[in-house]
Image 1 (tube, rainbow, N blue to C red):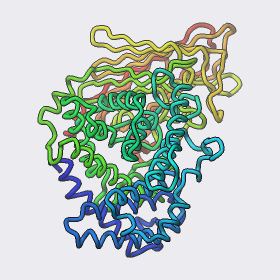
Image 2 (tube, one colour):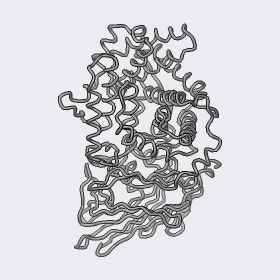
Image 3 (cartoon, rainbow, N blue to C red):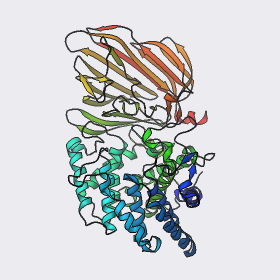
Length: 594
């Protein structure tokens, strides 16, 4: 639909929130959505989103009678939900909902004293953080941000003495100092180099939680937040796509609410606000058109060729729906505070996008190994190239490989690992495999006559198939990317570290949503889809396969259609060996017309 963000909330979001909240109240423990038994124990976050849904309906009610009705229903919901297992994010959502009621003087009116006491005991950061040393219980480091939010809201509710939220902030800053230093981004692992959406979002989330809890925002956090906002602004596009690599993205990566927080707090220039607001409206429209499935009456992350990782499984369907609605609601509230209520997106949005720089490098870490993200803007395409390490159990996963990523154009398959997508995999004489990933150093960028180059070196390759990255010192490599209009090129050159290295095979895959492959020597042309051609030098084409109906190759946005496999055969690496590929893309505007 066209229109403002407020219109989308009023016409599409709030009615669906009311639908789900009413279904919960009617069915209770027996609630089933899309064949999923919501309270079977597979969703430990849903209670918090249900409370937030009820609070939204009460606080936006058109009159006192309707508000009283929803406050009574919140009380009924709370009496049930206090006995439901709730963990991590679900705890955060729940205490945030309670604080919103408290701010309006409605908490005790809506929820009984006994139920509040039950929540006080249950909704606690100590369920996933050890109290004695404030270490996480086997969770990624972004959960310190969750704990910080819970601690701040508990202090606001009068359940804890002040000070714990500040301790979690100090813990997060210490992690950033240790693993990112002056770059100022959070490693989602304890030092492996997994910088993803959560790494960029955590400063924004902390900033918002300090604000919501009425705590003064540290100046350093303000600086880090602004840095994250700058990165998000450079992802802006007319198609509503957001973050395109890493775990648990898809719909969750598309809507970047940090932009609304920055706008509400006066951190953006007037030009940036117009750009950010238009981008948010485009993302919201995508949310309610592409991600929302009217037949399912649900956001669809799992069916009809779409796939997500195991973390955001379909057993969380109600929490996913209410959680995504809440993201839209919060962003709209922030844009309203920024003076954009009922505002239409800027008519010159496309021109504003065209004025953004065609290449930006955002350094994440500059220690022993260098990490960062390149954002390349080519016509309507916005390509992300993460030069990172996915860390334990994810370093060979497609969503973390140092390859170009773009939603609906160059997408990795969630929840799978080991495919050599766009990266050569060398099988050694002993049967083990190595890849030029994880251990990147000496990253350089330059522009020459409209062509952007990014290169890095690896003094050792990375063994594939281990639980975590393990260095192989027998070979080193240099990787060079070149980006020009409509074209991406990658060249890998492998060097022996002394003695020749026997290689059974160098293999690589390219799996794409493009269809209609036509083989022309070492080039494959495609009749339709975002990629028009793919050419390889240094390997031979050995297989072209239709994978449309293979679940293994489904992405967040839908199925891939074509898999090409390339191989060298046996090689003795006595001298440098080079593998080169060139990928050409169609314009996004043409894809919209197809």
